[in-house]
Image 1 (spheres, rainbow, N blue to C red):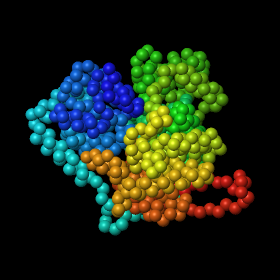
Image 2: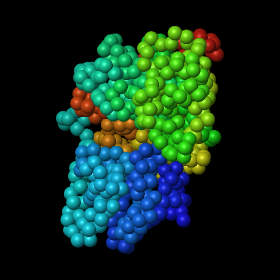
Image 3: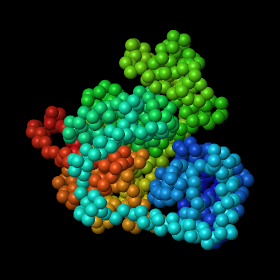
Image 4: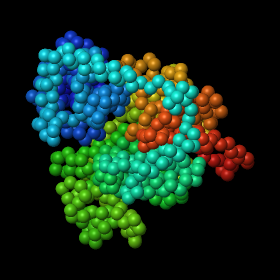
Amino acid sequence: MANRLAAETSPYLLQHADNPVDWWPWSPEAFEEARRRDVPVLLSVGYSSCHWCHVMAHESFEDGATAEYLNAHYVSVKVDREERPDVDAVYMEAVQAATGHGGWPMTVFLTPEGEPFYFGTYFPPEPRHGLPSFRQVLEGVRAAWTDRREEVAEVAGRIVADLAGRSIGYGGDGGGDAPRPPRPEELGAALLGLTRDFDARHGGFGGAPKFPPSMVLEFLLRHHARTGSEGALQMAEATCEAMARGGLYDQLGGGFARYSVDASWTVPHFEKMLYDNALLCRVYAHLWRATGSERARRVALETADFMVRELRTPQGAFASALDADSDDGTGRHREGAYYVWTPAELREVLGEEDARLAAAHFGVTEEGTFEEGASVLRLPDADGPADAGRIESVRSRLLAARSGRPRPGRDDKAVAAWNGLAIAALAETGAYFDRPDLVEAATAAADLLVAVHLDTGGRLVRTSRDGAAGSGAGVLEDYGDVAEGFLALYSVTGESCWLELAGILLDTVLRRFTADDGTLYDTADDAERLIRRPQDPTDNAAPSGWTAAAAALLSYAAHTGSSRHREAAERALGVVTALAPRVPRFIGWGLAAAEAALDGPREIAVVGPAGDPATTVLHRTA
């Protein structure tokens, strides 16, 4: 029988609707049930395209004996981190503080008051690699809850107090003065820090696993535009080149995977996220604008086409993600099965001669670069093909053959923030490369957000699915990123409604998410109260709500001349002043916004007859 999750709309929750675990969605009723039964809460947080979430679900949550034990001794709550980023953020902060690392699936044990007291991520069904089994964890937590309740309460109280002490009160640049945006010297210090972390051999920053640094690349391109720094441009170019030629990029269908498991961009973790592709599409379009690179142009357009082809929903929004796993044709679900190739598979599709060409061009070997002798397609030859026409024929035939394989699952919920990023990317890419169809796709997504996600009071809901709004309230990143998308669409189309709607969203940011001193919070002042009001200015996989709001406020001020919005943006950028010299890799969007604050706004007068194409320009301000 289906459990309570069958009534939810989240694809991730629906994946667990047939588990024998008696799951509850996040709700006051779940915690009331834990109080009534006097049992702890097991909180399990993940998302639909998470490989290890699938693994733990199969090993533990689909297991009858494990489910029986859980149902007897716990109230089990399942959360989609993409639907409730506030819940995820609060408890992930606790996990990272207690263990020094985090990840998904996130496994947290709570009191019926929502206070965490024991943490982990993935737990295997049997002890291995130094990890206890999930059953051992369940039994140990139950014993502590039953026999050492005072100790549990003490630990939980200590953790909640520690989290409360982590809230950011505004000191801006660390002193008593009003917060201010970074000056040129602080942005220079950020560039120096990035130079120290730069991987000169493979591009990117740091080692394995290596994530696409889209927001840092935006900063580097803007820094080059403002200062002429060749070092900033070289790091951006080298990183974009390495990612585009590596396995991180889908050499047949376009679009980027979530991250590379190695330092050389060879083997990706194959899930494809909307936010990564929106951000990287924009980066490559901006790189083309700076350099005229043909590869940057091709990657920007192929990534835009991937989003429209693979992620667009029937309602005009963009789905959240494609799964990493798919059926390998034998009934087994394997990571990367849709994307990898063996020499034999090349020969089957292309014939002997073209298979040899494809193997050399895409780096496919008998040994393989992935599992079971398969290879991830990449472009190891920097010089490119001798016969571009023949390579394009090979590529199109392989893509057609791949389309016949079982496809990865798609999480088809629309997240407001990520759709905002996609709108900005598609609008600008369409304008740069004379692709009105991309601008039309951006406009359709914006129309959906207005019709389904935005109410008459200027409030957003976080998600929708099949054209119906979800129940979760929008968080700060939703307001910042959707406003960013609307402002980009206004810049491209000149339609004033998008400027007006961005202003409505940003007024909500100032009214509901901003403290008197300019400090920003991830949830509104009237949102559900958690053990802490979440607040994080650092960028992670996508711009933080804090930096997204700062950038959108700055852009809106440039369009309208509003000093109120400009001042709010500058106060918000005070946190970048403090973080830029110390952790530049984790404040890239804030650094990019700070570059815009230093460099603009610029005003250009274009004089000519109304309607003359020569007087129509793309208006970019931030």
